[in-house]
Amino acid sequence: MSDPTAVNHDLSLLAPRFRAAVEASLVKCKAAGLDAMVFEGFRSSVRQAFLFAQGRTRPGKIVTRASTSLTSWHGYGLAVDVIHRTGFWEPFGKDARKNEQWFGDVAAIFKATGCNWGGDWTAPDTPHMQWGRCPASPTPSIRAMISARGVAAVWAAMQADAAAPPGPSPASAVVGGAVAAPSPPYASLVPGGFFSHDPFDLTVRRAIRTNNPGALNISPWQRAYAGFKDVTKPDSAGNVTTIYRTPEHGVGAWLHLFTVRYGFGPGGSPTLQELALKYSGETDPAAAAVRTYIAGWAAASGGTLNAASTIRLDQDHDVLPLARAMFHHEAGKPSPLSDAQILFGLDGERAGTLPKV
Image (spheres, rainbow, N blue to C red):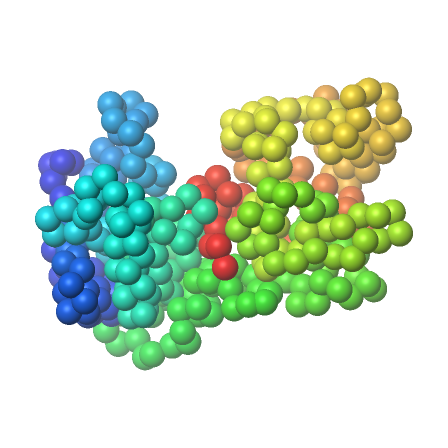
């Protein structure tokens, strides 16, 4: 078994085109006086498990959300962590502003050579750089691909192998089961996924046209949420609904509403009635609005949900049917979003990897 404490700096284990981008970026960093180096590149399954245990079953602070090497691009040779050669994670000691500026300057160079930066995520990972044609995290289809066909197949799908021709810019490339980053103003983060390009088309229900399947009305936290784009004009009932760049951001905001704003927590288990109370703003379980929501969600679920149904917010097999039911209720018909889109938004909110653009 390999040593889990050993850090791998070998750039030859990276995908060819990603390695070329990393090496070119390091040269440019040196020329700019930034003195950057790769601290870690490829990461084995043993190493990833060791890091994931830190702050959980082993002392220390949490340093990764990826539980296995298949859920981190490090395990595919498509990510590196970049730090200062002598100052490491603190190039300017305890001067947080200068440290942040240094990582931002390094990131600008890496992004110019086709990489994405973890500092742009909703839960920033400032040393992290990855190939720009990768989604924020490996999708289920990508994990299945490496298991069935090997890492070379993933490199090819990501246009990171030596034979891959230049593709679209990383800001809009559709690759390996996801879009690296949406092209403003509107897009989907899943290839072929539904999205609305006109949120002001009043002939379309607002839960569909706004890329906001939960039809969340605007509030201050949403303006700061990743993917916020605009708001609708007030409707006849006075509703002003948030518009997101992608429906996956809208899904993430919907889950964030339950786990953070409603206070149920990431591992919470509210009942359908408890959600209806929060959603309606009522305190009386017998209130008409509460009963209307429960009845609507139950009907949209085909009768699989009722007031006493418990929803474990960290379990996709609980949250996905709830999402389907609630989105159906808001749209007045089944949501056009695919399960892959909904799951992408849920995963992105939990991991903090939904892109800010």
